[in-house]
Length: 297
Image 1 (tube, one colour):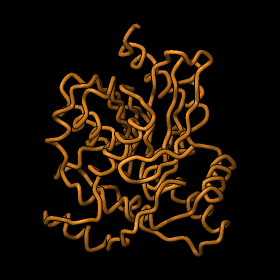
Image 2 (image 1 turned 60 degrees about the vertical axis):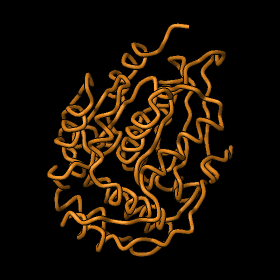
Image 3 (image 1 turned 180 degrees about the horizontal axis):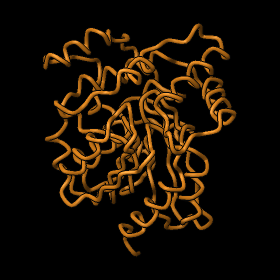
């Protein structure tokens, strides 16, 4: 379904539990360049089976949501300026994406909800909890960051995988490319079956292929800089989850996020990289946290 929010149109999918009346809502926010279908069906089902209404959205410039008229930024130049500590400008920042998300909640008449964000989605979720504290029952930030300067960078191999380009825009070359990327950044202890990876990449390609959107979102991340002051304002009950083997957003980022949110719970997962291959572990950790922070009606 389409909803209008913050002057843009967003694709939203809602999964209801068996008894939808009065069910608390969990909002899922996906990461850089990822569509709402990137949330594993097993994870969505675990939430609905537990009695939660699950809302997923395509962020701007991705999937079936609004494609902005912004030009794709020069990421090399932006990256150099970022390393030098210089101000970076982009057509939009993570703060705009926070307001997108708040607008989607408004359009759906959702007053308060649990918010779970992965990677860039975790950054947006942090911003929502900071700037709109009354809307967030709890925050779960997975493999994300505050963007603080001085935190370790991605490993050279992960960086190269991220900036590499597929041979062509043909479906088979795109699938092959992302299979290689996920082999680099994925979880060594929880490897996904290659057949499943290929199927999911193919489904994402068939639904929407817009690589410029990933570049624009990366520009928004770089332009947002250090969000530590914003993150320190989060008052919602918070769970921070990070993989010990994340080569893209190293473990120190999770530690830093948790330290800057007063009273947050922190979980490190051995063998977890930058993906959601360890679903049973995540579900086992997240569901009790949600139950603990769901008001009794």
